Length: 362
Ligand SMILES: *Cc1c(COP(=O)(O)O)cnc(C)c1O
Image 1 (cartoon, protein in one colour):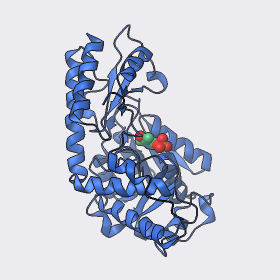
Image 2 (cartoon, protein in one colour):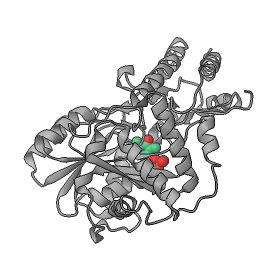
Image 3 (cartoon, protein in one colour):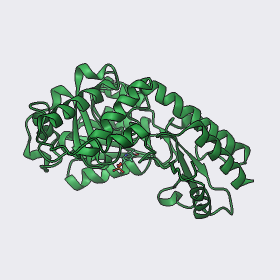
Image 4 (cartoon, helix red, strand yellow):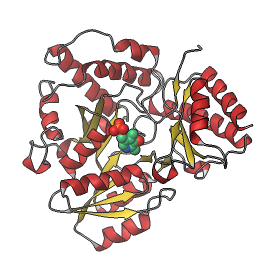
């Protein structure tokens, strides 16, 4: 147990033995039928994580980190002729605005401060007054702070005004509620190595089947055109480019584990109980949460670094005891630390962690 490292950063996560062992399943060629079958099985099971999406939506698997899937989703679905509205309240929303700008897609940004909720009021008045806006882009769980954005309310607006929702669900897929039909969800992007507990290397886009079409030059990219993947993966099962074979073994095992553990609801429950154990230990030690407790996702909590405590000292002390925590981003790098709840964390790990935190802040 002494050498065990527990990752409490928001992905990649501590692997279960099953997932780690799956990595050495064998040497497979990505152009042999067994790998085509595996690809199709993973895609099918990705759409079954949320029961209702299997009937309406399809998944494509890509080699790259979560950012690749997000950028591919935007490149493939954000239109070149009408405008896309981006709601931001953190690093990841702002990154999507930067991507759309880099692609030269017409867009509007409704921004909020990084500790604020998304500005739904401003978004609604823009949607109401500007018929040129056809697509809405948002982050489900804004990992900058741990805030679970109110995509429920935003999705209702998308439904009401018939706007297509494109969602960064990179750090929520597999652990938070997602309503595909109710939210008018055109597509989401996510990754293997956050709430699904796989390894880095694979990410995916799930989109409504009606919206997959022919590969198009409008996408402005060959590698990121999700239609190219849809045609081959949902045809014979092969991919247009080399998929990360071993991470696919790991994702296969990780999806089986998610299913055996009771699916996304059970995962959310276990994340929540880990979060409240850490939150109450830190609260007793006088450490405050960065935003109100009820506004966090189940996936991660951000805390205020108390006056006089340097992040590096906290980080190094915990790392020596086998725990890797995460700093704040941007302006929060000196005032915040973050503790995520994903991955194979045992009750014993959690007890040792809360004791280590209590001792550090005593
Ligand atoms: C982690 C994360 C990403 C980026 O994923 P990478 O795998 O680091 O590229 C995008 N959006 C959100 C909300 C994330 O948490």
